[in-house]
Image (cartoon, helix red, strand yellow):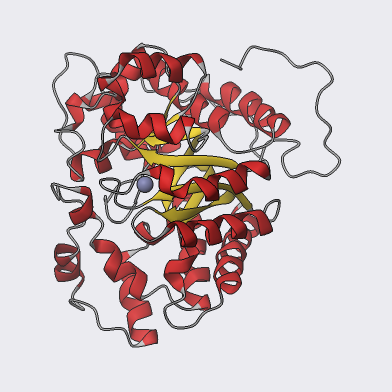
Length: 389
Ligand SMILES: [Zn+2]
């Protein structure tokens, strides 16, 4: 990852400061966010042939953290990661370690996504895939306190039938750790409307959905995600700036954008970080959230992405805090739980000051705010509108 700092004539807060901020990661792929050493380890355990067993060589052959020029090239690293994710123990471990990694940089809430049908090559039952990932996340929650939920993905370039199957799985696991449905994969030549049935099914079951759109195709793809498939959030949305009318619609409806700046540079969706449209979107009032996409493949963390926004795009600490709050607001969580998070996080954020100081935080017995996951918690009778923008 680039640690270069653009000279924007303002004081720069260090990366460590961003690591301490409470955060979300709402757009992170399980199969793009393994540890490199875990790939090597799992390959040994399950006798998988890798392009190289030397970490540096493997990193190079997978183009980790490199500009790939296109989404299709970028996605090639997944050929390797998926090979070692075909057993329950591997899925459990990868999920657990991801939660452990995000907890280390103070991500308080994560929505991790993946496509279960990509993990059945060696005969694993699809429900066993889902259960193994959920078990890993649950174990991480119990030992580390990090809260996470799952978004299941259909893949554009596989088939509408398999998307429908994944949608059925999302329905089956609703309220059991699965909170959403997504469409990922090659955007060009594979329009979301082909997968309309899957989205109809998840929406008929009151499940949230998000769609990768406007990354490798134009704003028409975003319009289709919203108007044909009923997406509640948009993954990336880099090319939204090409359609002002749609941009205003997204703003007016407070539809969150899951921005993943470094990934967008690596797939060629944007030229460089400085020209990423997220600052424009933010300035126009859109609900912009900052995410990693793939912690391994993009070689990043949420802290790095926020730090890039600060150093490469000139966004102030106040802007950063607003995007962090937008992350919690945009989570696929029940409203009263989001309120509990927002109360806690907005209070915590006040302790981080623009001169890089962190005033002593209130005693943090748990990263989980009062009420979250507590059966006895009741939604407040008075709902304020302070944090609802
Ligand atoms: Zn993605």
